Length: 130
Image (tube, rainbow, N blue to C red; front, side, top):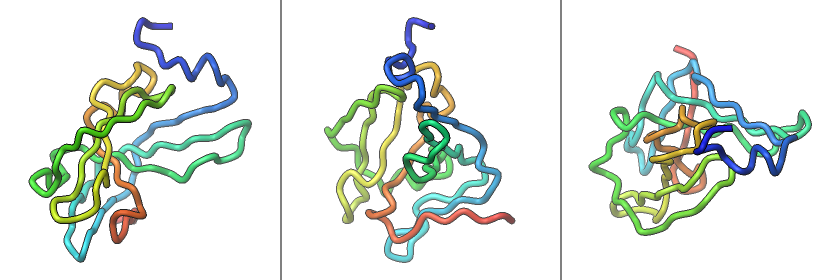
């Protein structure tokens, strides 16, 4: 265990998080506008005792997100596996539509500084093989 280890990994040993390259082109659109478009997404999968507990979440590198369309909010949440999440709203759109882990726990270092979007706050999040 490192000094920055997520407490959830000890508290819930049967809960697994796997972060890996998505190996697809992933896009987020809102009102017909592409907000994020990348071939470098990280795909996060969560399972417990072999069963999926959450849909796949794609984390985008900031360089592939139209950051000028996002506005940082004061909202924060804590995940015992990933750390403290900071949030962004889409300018002129839904509040807290995206989140990021700027200092994730060591086990989830692959998510550092990347953004993910809530599917119910954007038009679509699509992943396709090119």
